[in-house]
Length: 158
Image (cartoon, rainbow, N blue to C red; front, side, top):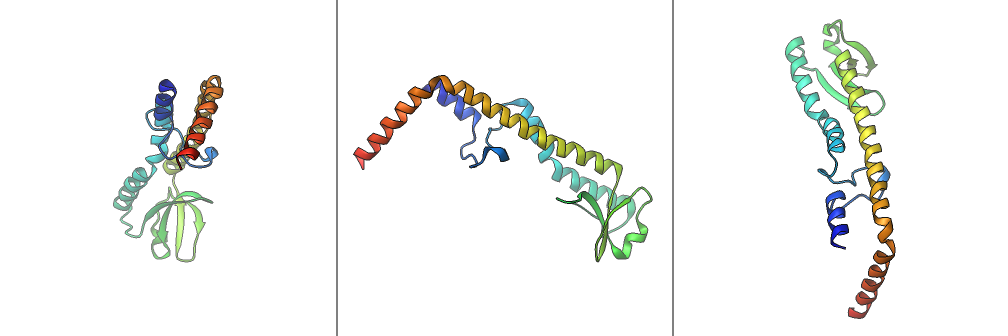
């Protein structure tokens, strides 16, 4: 079982989530392509922080914030009091009580890339998980016998 143990230790994180469909089961370093998709999705916070600093400096708007919400996606938010100073390339996305939210082509492009990367990472992770099952299937009977023996031993010891 040493080969199977090594494979599972490389492929699966130490404490995987209960539901495989949500992802986060396959360990980093197991598949280079998966790591690349995850890095793009995980790098969103750094990108948003850099964009916020850059746009604040460019526009001189101290209330400018960059964020994300599940309904409208990524946005640039400016307080209502400064919204009349928004650059012409800012396209209004949402109006709030005290602020306006905008999108710019660069941010929309990045949003599409990030959302695509999350979907591709999840699809690849599911595929890798299924491949692991295929690799384990020929050893299923031996694994079940070992599990049964360990369960019996556990009962006898306690």
